[in-house]
Image 1 (cartoon, each protein chain N blue to C red):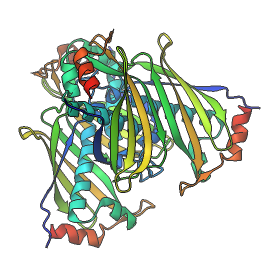
Image 2: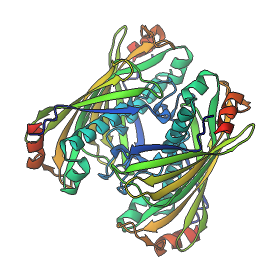
Image 3: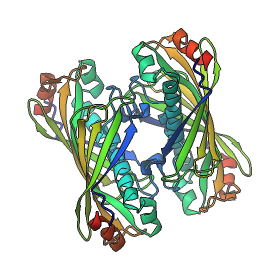
Image 4: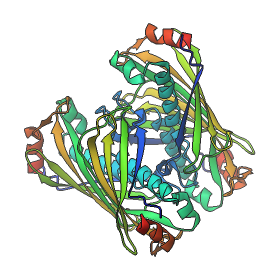
Length: 136
Length: 136
Length: 136
Length: 136
């Protein structure tokens, strides 16, 4: 049985992601978290594009990020994503972002999600996704 | 008869749009041009959301920007949009971005567009849009 | 004495801010909150660019957003920003985002900030800023 | 002698980069081109961060992109960057973006750059950079 306790993703800070303070703008972390859960689901064997093909959106209902240390242009970052909790109508992911060169913790975050159909009506988290996640 | 020779839009440079050079990152200008043509179409009486409701996307096929002078955080910019050319399957917009405080020209640009249906098949520029634009 | 209990800002959802779900991507809200506190400080008489000219960055240490309802392209949004708390080394802003047409609450959020010098060393929130905020 | 005729970079389309048409928003291509020349310079042995450490910005003076076919979420893209021309005060990069799965050409682009010092005064393209590029 596949066991995905957590997923890791490495990427570099883009120049376009920096701001006039000379650091990665804090809004980008929210985009990076999304990349983390996309990688998590892919590793689980269910790419997010496949979830949407089955008619479900995993809408973000809450996001939180704590910023410890800044990232700068061209830093290689190591993003760890793990499933925080899973209920019939809510799933939560938790994240840590480290600088790859020295594993300095730069930020921690979470996102919470509900599932909707394409008309944006709330639906339960699909069973095929729950099965995969509960095994993980 | 309505005459929209050109449309003008004012907005401020966001902090998130700056980069580590301390200026607005050049990619944002492409987003600003889009705001300009959205404002142009709205002023014409045909909001872009309405074009999509009628089943047509105005897809960007080409974009070009020449950068003359940098914009910095909180600068108020004045964006002028005008129709450059209009053919059965291509429309072109042209743009100028000035700093509002002294009308210094910061950048010039253009975009070219084709129309597609929702399956991304090319279709002629809709006649209702051409009528509006030819009167403009 | 100037009293800025809260500041309000109106703006439209850009097409570039939408995503494949057809709604404004959730990361943009973090950028919008920043626009809210920039407007708040300007209304207070101390533009953020002036804070930086005095040698201080107001670095984001924490952000949180709860998403209630989606925003779509071209929606006019009403963003309300108010000071949540103010300590010697931390300030907190709180935000609400409504759809302007019907005042439907779309999202709520907060940001927390510390002050740093240009070498990114933590410094107290500057007294001139505290004075303005405590009067507000 | 090091020969960098061209540099290649692979990356995936982020969900945050999609728009309400269900495709990657055209503004992101400008950010991707930047990633391409950053990778090009790194491969040349002179990371762009190093250029800035030596006191020079490579400012974008012109950008152009032609869009052939759309990219969608999670597509793996293959970005090829090559030096287009090099003069004492101007350098030009040229780019092609393909879909990695079938090498379908999605877009072509170019950027032109001048060098400035940190006060944004134009300076010649640094000799150490020209040497590297002329050997490439």
